[in-house]
Length: 241
Image (cartoon, rainbow, N blue to C red; front, side):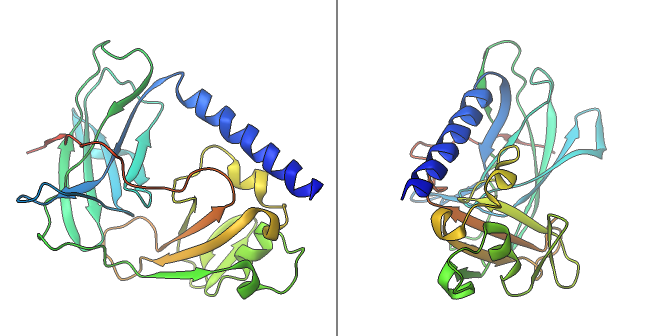
């Protein structure tokens, strides 16, 4: 019991530090989503590939991102007073392009909204399939570490800390449905999975062209919020033509 309390205390302290650091600088952040033209209902789109370009160099990629389970992503370390083109390709959806709005000194800290609204069929649902695993399903060993649990996910390999498919395909690691901050995985990988992990979900992306990853492994840990749709109305970036 004391070990579990210590682990949870360390995780909570680390997550809190990351949140405070994130709010100290201005950065682009948003959600990839679609909107029903009749009801106005907004649906977040996970696993979208976002390619970022400078406005004056629209053919040279300067950053790549993937949206989380709630469609979220961020762009940090960029000059937020500049304008960028963001090209978005999601599973089952053709690539679409948007342009960011420069900050021009309006916002001093926190994030600048950068929500791309994709045009989709009215009945769009993510076609990506999920496989879920509990700690007990993957191993009877109560002392198995988080990293050892990752190695036991069918079809995946862990080589020198890098997760790939057995065919050498690229796999994106997420934690609680988010793109992990800093070295969070390295902080938890040696902890007992039974104390830290609620479950692992694997999403196979190999059937979809134009994405930067072949799969996503989401580790759901026992502390912190899991990714969920925003509780406010999103306003989209302008299309880039």
